[in-house]
Amino acid sequence: MGSKAAMVVFAERGAQRINSGEGGIDLPKSERLAEALLGTAVQAKGLLPLDLAVWPSPNVVCAASLASQEIICARDLAKNEPSRLTDAICSLAAGRSAYGVFMDSAEDWAAFAVWSADGLVRSLSVSPEVGVIEDVGARFSFEGAFWEGGRPVRSYPGYALPFHPLELGNEALKEFFGFVLEGDEGDSCFDPEDFEVPSFAALR
Image 1 (cartoon, rainbow, N blue to C red):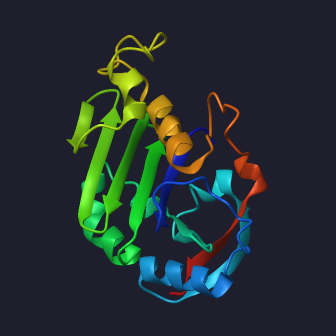
Image 2 (cartoon, rainbow, N blue to C red):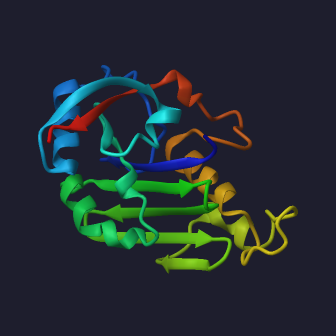
């Protein structure tokens, strides 16, 4: 599948490794989260490993409510300008922080965004052809190596960036959530195939 993701995590204590060992997933709350995003009743469709759940089928939402964080994944979240999600994300966050990572390897496009209880904190969206699509807020420390030329694009010299967008997207997954879809996992990463997320389809 490559690196494809449209994932947002809501948390009280800021970005943290996804952890299902906090009493497990609350299925009724997960269903309500999916309904809140879709705006309609939903039907449970079973569990998906996280590496697939981050890019579910169209009209399917993957959602998991844990003790200290909630996860939601849906293709409709993959906006070229993540700032456009601010109203919807802040409504779902209900005063919590939110962290999103979005990318599509078919286009080599990647983006991430962070929201606080007060609104958008950071949004970055990049693609090979356009370069920077959106760049709002102060850069995070993990971005430094990319902008400073420490992660050069050796195989794609025509890209309008000093790095490959999908490498940045995977680094954001690692920084915010503790896993990657492709690239260097590092000692701190967990295997997303080991964590399963409930999936839901809209009842229409």
